[in-house]
Length: 129
Image 1 (cartoon, rainbow, N blue to C red):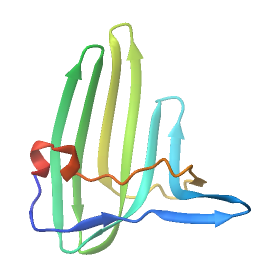
Image 2 (cartoon, rainbow, N blue to C red; image 1 turned 45 degrees about the horizontal axis):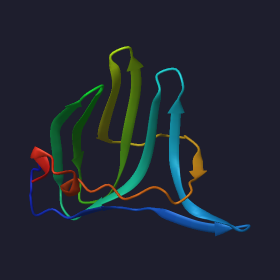
Image 3 (cartoon, rainbow, N blue to C red; image 1 turned 90 degrees about the horizontal axis):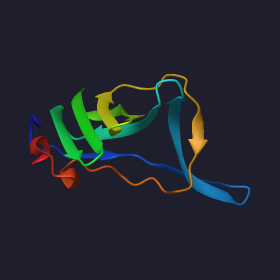
């Protein structure tokens, strides 16, 4: 569910170049015990908006789910995108979440520019139409 279908939003990706290296920097936290990766991004909305919904897709040996529950205020916010991966004898489970919030003092990392912007509309989920 999107509380206002006319709301416009974008995430900010910060690119840097230094010492013959370039890429996107992001605040990232990894928990090797729970196999969870989190990334925090600046996120802008042109009006107050709520994003809420769940989607699960099942494939042979893989189940993926996404849970979105975030209320954003007009202007800049921060969003945390989390992914947890687990494996068992029956297959792989991937659980994703999107929440308003930040990773506090988590470290910033230089990525290899492989990160792509996330568009909820591009995911074709029931709550993003």
